[in-house]
Image (cartoon, rainbow over all chains, first blue to last red; front, side, top):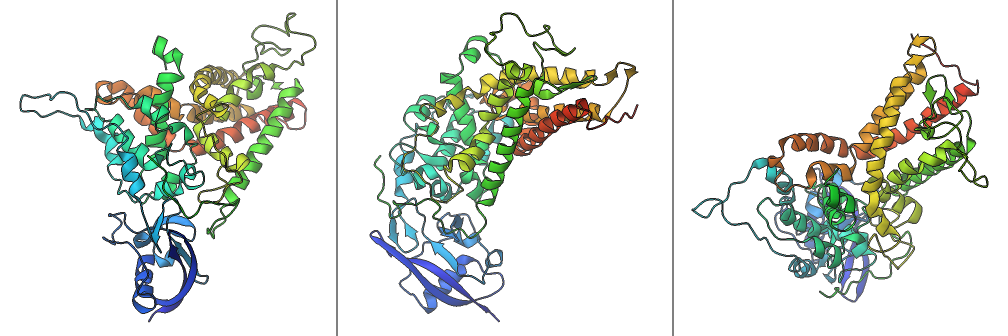
Length: 245
Length: 261
């Protein structure tokens, strides 16, 4: 036996839109995406919503639920106060295609501006490398990223200040960190991080880390270590001269 | 790459769909840091009641020049300009002050609380312009590790003070003040050596950390501290303020230092 719940869902397109309210019956164990599907099936067959795995692994159903960037498939209704309408909006940082669906292709264009993986020469005659587990512990965390772009959505440099043409955002800083810290990689991205990707725009709000559905410690394990590498190169003559701590 | 065309471009201060008490954390940090700043500034200018027996307030240590027996180089020097106000704390407090000011945790916290940049995650901001830490003045935050290195030295002196707090004029002893100063250096040590910059310098700088097994072990310990950096930051801030209050009130005769031994 379900109970009624109300959802304020943003409907519109690239030129704007607004909230429409829908009431539907919800049951124990449901997530927000289930409720959206109920609304779609019963009342709004033209409601656009992107989804795929329903298991928090494809990163397709990113949206803003009660104002916070979250995956719709991983937000259980019992975590929300259903006595008031639940607000569901598309991500604010990217162009709206329709309703809850946004165009995230900017991220893939920006990704191409990061220097690619460039491994050292193979360690063995058969063209393979030898890596210690300790050396890849750090970068393995970054491989958990599902590219849901919730961190890009919540980053105020992109969301509020629209610095898309200057700043690559937390997701792509994680990607750059995965390459830059890789034990086999020989490419140097530090100059790009400072001058081209403007890592200095990040003011460490930690919002990106807070919304990551994969619990990647984005700020502390990716962005700050990259900032420190920029400091090594440009702001710390003492370390350069004396190699001290 | 060109910026995409976005619907939500005219954000207004405080605009959000969040329904939780998003303002609570920045407001608490605003109050907490303000209270500490006001008290620390007042205490630093007092130039009095900063020692009691073997205890010295951490705001005044190391006491380079001063009138107490703890002074390393004697009383106020003759070369110190007469027209400048003097307090031993003013000679030293800028080091931990700037260390905390440029600390990654505090930066994220006070940008939100004092400058609303942003007020909280996914909440509208009051200003359209934004420079971040890539140009003056905030580019100076990159000198954090300079103050980290100076803080190692200050912390070393505080350890010395904590050890000295066991030695009273009548011999070895343990008072409440001894414990206050000992706990203070432990909390300050957790904060200083859990610093993000220290974590990078000790091991984060290596892509092949397995080639440096000793540094790797320290890196793992520092990473443990670093994961709790916010807690160390607040605990040490409270303890350093309380240590000053304790020594001050004992010195003024308002509190009595109870001796265990």
